[in-house]
Image (cartoon, rainbow, N blue to C red; front, side, top):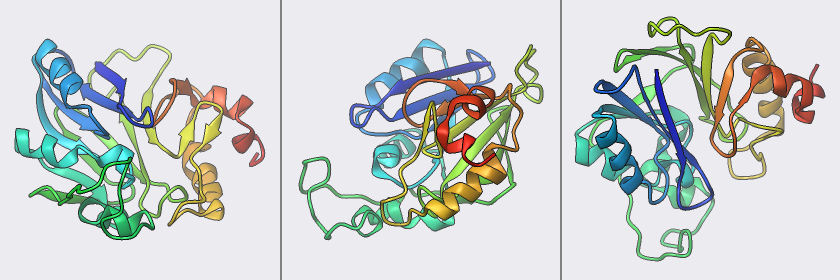
Length: 230
């Protein structure tokens, strides 16, 4: 299994490239600001063939480069229906005035990729030889999702670990995503943490939208937002 993660130029948003191995097809998760150069290097180094872009939610630090990445490689983008409006109109989605500068830059334009496919809760994506389960986990945004990758289904000898979770801005090492932005809700976040995150095995590796890798077990024991729910 090949999982390459690297931070974007703004907000340290983690972009992930996931493939069964070198020379295979791959998926790209959360292409944020200024990721194209490093993404192209990873794809070329490992001789990968992108087949899709997966979005954990609609915030611009996770979606900024989705259009150029999809256009350059003629691949679809996947996002939950409740966050889809963010692709073409990030201003309204983020509670901004139309045309207001974003990340300090004015005159930016946004549009949906030509092929956008909507994610559904408990759906399974079979892409690039991978099997990813989608769980709707609102709270940070209404359409936030997490992607669970079954390593055994991918033919990987997983050892002590059975899954990898791409948690977006639902769960971080030691913290959770903020809930004070438009579409955020602490009540919904608590439900998502309780029903989606805490239902997972301790051995699950967590690749979050920001910050370092962790595990469900470590967060269950040390993350105050999870401990308060148990």
